[in-house]
Image (tube, rainbow over all chains, first blue to last red; front, top):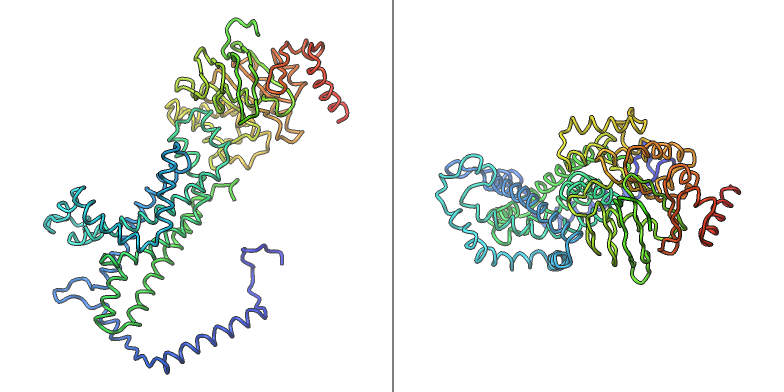
Amino acid sequence: MTSTIGQRTGRFRPTRLDGILLVGLVAAAGWMWYRSAVGVAYRWDWPQALSTVFATGDAGETPFFLTGIYATLRLSLWGAVLASILGVLIGVGRYAGGRTLRMFCGTYIQILRNIPPLVFIFIFYFFISSQLMPLLGLDTLFNRPAEEASGWQRFLFGPPALWENLVSGVLCISFISAAYIAEVVRAGLAAIPRGQWEAGESLGIPALDRYRFVIFPQALAHIAPPLTGQYISLVKDSSIVSLISVQELTFVGSEIANSSGLLFEVWLLVAFVYFLLCLSLSILLRQVERRMTRHFHQIA
Amino acid sequence: MSGEPKPIIAFEDVSKWFGTFQVLRDVDLGIGEGECVVICGPSGSGKSTLIRCINRLETHDQGAVRVHGVPLGPGERLPRELRGKIGMVFQSFNLFPHMTVLRNLALAPMRNLGMDKDKAEETALAYLERVHIGDQAEKYPDQLSGGQQQRVAIARALCMQPDILLFDEPTSSLDPEMIREVLDVIFELTDSGITMVCVTHEMGFARKVSDRVVFMDHGEIVESAAPDAFFDAPREERTRAFLNQILHYEASA
């Protein structure tokens, strides 16, 4: 074998191990099919499931299931944007800040990473809805008549009636994700050789520009793979905000599953949609990563 | 210590510690405007730390450093008005690997001096010509040899039109056959009026290029003299021992 580990070989040559694995897989699939057909006695009804899921409302509204998908997309998008901003700020603070700032950022990261996300969300949601919204005046902002929302606002943020809902979800998701992104960012900054900082400094490049042109582009090339993983996690983890009644895919799925009784079909559909979302995201981000690291000759 | 009329860099009783280890001991040194000073000495003698105290990549703990008459106290970083005025060439080049050579050179003039892109690139090309690699402008650093990379680094420092240029062992990480091209470029800078401080082990270069050689050992300046006097008639025993070692090494190699 001339290729190294992790590299794709030119042609696939099955070995004995591949055969054993294949037999094992077929056996497992057959057993599961047998159990579900005989043991569970579950009556599959895909036509009914599909028509339920994609049924439009009485007045021709968007199907409930689709609104859930859109909500998950919006949650993920805004969650990723906010988490990135927070994560970079906290990561930089953790790496380069003074003692107090470093400690503050470190504490944030430790707290968020060491509490189950679900528990954090229950605590934090109470805080958001009872304190943060009134404090920022968001509740009055969001309680305006629906007609005032323009087309692009609806497109970006969904129906106005659910804005408060969306903001709660986005805040929860991004606060959690920011802690992980911050650690990734910190590691990326730490991986930049000291000489790069010193060269920038001795050339008199202003501090912010030093980050922008010298440090961040290189750090980003280092952390692109873990960052991609973090964004995919964020999409999947957005499902937990269904527990504070944010009407995203999981919330919608569980409503439909419970009301129709088509549990397996609906949950399989939900799983399939998450799978598609995350798969396309990872393919997209891999392309971005390739473009970004195209010119990084010295960086592996 | 020096009788130069107009010191552009002055160390007054400067000391510095790394933890309990004292790297600089009561250093007194004046460097005149336009002077070219070579600093030599065994490794760990504080040479690099000394020149890094000039552009404040390191700060000292006691005494005072003056650059351009601006007093810099212990722990003080470089004030705004001096930023970019003191260029530095590093042992490991420290080029920005994700930028073309041209962009490596143009970045600082654009961001610090507010030069527009065309002007900055024009300047950059002129300096690349000056270090004899005008044809490499569109390459990335890792497509160049070590000697070429170090010349790019020198050109990059020159683009900021510094008054002072610091060299921190500029040839120490180069393959032997590339040392010459870099030293030649540095030699060509001696009539530019830029004050140069160079830490190096290249004694032949020191003799040919410098106005003064400073020998450091254990964090203190042992001897400071014109190159002929320094190499032909060193006053201090420690200097003689060091030179013997170096020359012996060169003779056997």
